[in-house]
Length: 257
Image 1 (cartoon, helix red, strand yellow):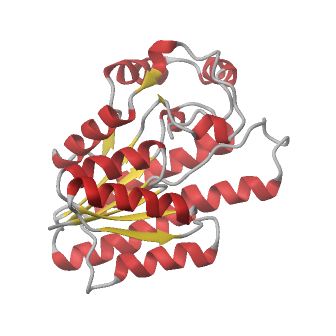
Image 2 (cartoon, rainbow, N blue to C red):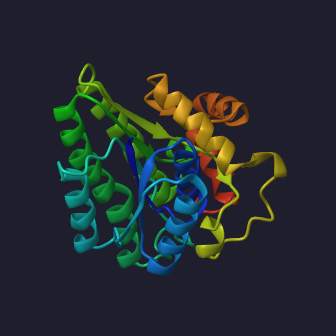
């Protein structure tokens, strides 16, 4: 039986990944900050699907938390076959309105943690000749979105570059770029969503099923909805200045979780 490790596992896209993978018979390692929610989720997944659900409480904005997950991914006695780097958050406010401490915290979670955990997982997977990594980015990576969009653009570029370097090793890497998903993401960031059209909202469970299918097919970039694929096609042709004005109306953290 294979094992998947999911960060940000207790809500939103992370929870959807945990449900889907457990239902498919994979053991899971659930990573998040809230121990109580982690234990409740682990019990539910174990009881419903008969899989082993391990709990690892870690704050990926802190060195201790990142190091703990790195150690788990590097443990040869308990190999991890799939890593889902999903942990993330958004900051409310425009550039210079958000504190530097919060900006740096975002970069730690979205960039440093993704780099270090992907490296730890991929190194172990390459030794075994198999494995996969899904790094959850966002369609915000393709539009001017301040620190959030910049961090997600880094995730996309890093993932696709690493995937190229590991081609032929048996290790697959993919950047997942959803649009708006009905999760706790915007509520936690204190952002309203009334100005977002209904057609732009995605279902987390359907999104995850598509993402896993794309990973199995060897894709290095997944935009898991025809509407957003079409929208991103338009984005490539639109002037950058126009994109900045449109994206600012949608709220600074144009995020998926």
